[in-house]
Length: 365
Image 1 (cartoon, one colour):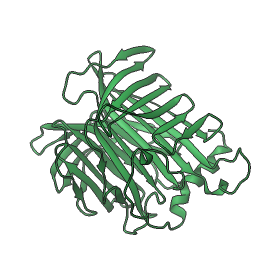
Image 2 (cartoon, rainbow, N blue to C red; image 1 turned 90 degrees about the vertical axis):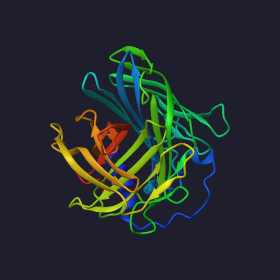
Image 3 (cartoon, rainbow, N blue to C red; image 1 turned 45 degrees about the horizontal axis):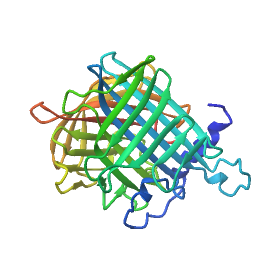
Image 4 (cartoon, helix red, strand yellow; image 1 turned 135 degrees about the horizontal axis):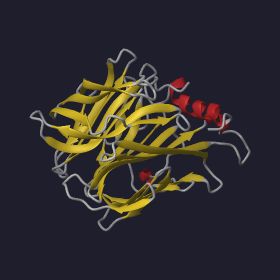
């Protein structure tokens, strides 16, 4: 990243931690409008992860678009003022090759280079894009993912198969003890994925074989306050259950690794009632660690996960899934394809595990 961009980016991301924010006003979410951007709030992301199979090889993929409002630029008259920043991460986990490929982008919004529509999900950053199209059923969505990255490319369509999950209280998810520490949070589990990936110049068409193949998960989250100032990071997972259900769980951590706030949800079947977890209902207990040779960070890659829905095990399917995004968001974090197992060790789901704040506190001040 050019040095002149770095202070601006850090200021934009530090803003949510620097001053108190008002509690979001309760309001019913309205779609497709709320699939789109909310530029009046500081921080927003569209996060899509999944597992696919191509030529009998299993892969995990991630693409995330972020939008950050730059407070210092809001009053500037120049058309070149960086009022909003758009940045993105993409990654491909090659389980057979035991490797992680990843890339990143960043640009100011405008001039046809980067944009995030306020009317619906339609995000473009250079040659990367995530665009929602109405699907066949009422309210259904098809997300077109296009990203040509270093060493790999994604040309995927992810289509909803069940209603979205409005996390927390009708979509308002608390992230800390203060009322202002909350975000609007919508999850779309069990997305059916079609299309192709490209690895090392070879195009590979998707072809499933297992119940968990070609399934994805999407989170859309937006807020004025990113996280409590005493939090250094979080552990989070979104798991597609093999029977069609969904599990979300997260814990925000203090510097001494003690839990500060927790949450999540459990929907055992598409038509089942949603069980929402409270701030003390979720516990992540490390069982095995892996140390990154690149950053020196020590990550728990196997967990015992306790929730009101039961006790589970979370296992990384590849230890080395650390992403260095210092050229865009300024952070190093672990984001990887993982398996969910029941108390008897039987695999019951697959999805992604995210761990932040291990290489350094996630506080970009």
